[in-house]
Length: 126
Length: 108
Image (tube, rainbow over all chains, first blue to last red; front, side, top):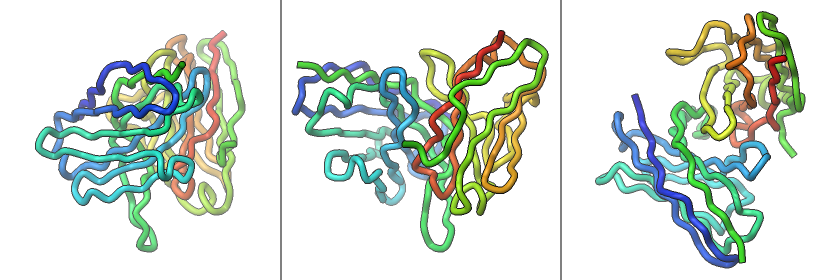
């Protein structure tokens, strides 16, 4: 069984950065891939990207390119997601999830998310 | 705008069966049997209920089943129970970075 425990809620001002952590237990973290998904209030799920804890390879959704950085620390089995230049529409619940990837035609792509963190609420307001 | 299209809402009475559709394209659902489905109760994180098209993770009720026809994937919940009231999202390889818009299931 895999457990993902995320850091607590954050309140930020527009233009600031936020860094959310996601600590894994119950599995071999260094062989895992972690994805980040956010959900604005009353809205659906939005995929932000994923990172391989093994290789450090990252793949970000185009919408967040240049504004997001995902990292991992295998010594503490923790994944991090940093989002910069925050705007009010970044107010959302941010989830980490272990993601299963598949390689088809040489391209590694996430295709399902089997374990999820409890979520971290990030509120951006002046 | 989601690349996968789901109905905004569906409803059913206890004991009935309902089906939620997820319409994609020949580049995603139509080409691969790699659709996943997630259940999300209010205030909770999403939960995987179907992966690789038709497989259920351990602990997920066999009242949940899934299928695919052409570019459309479907989630069926049989023997509807009050606890099934939740939001449901689909996701497919090919558009694995995009979820469907979500469907709110109301148990009447």
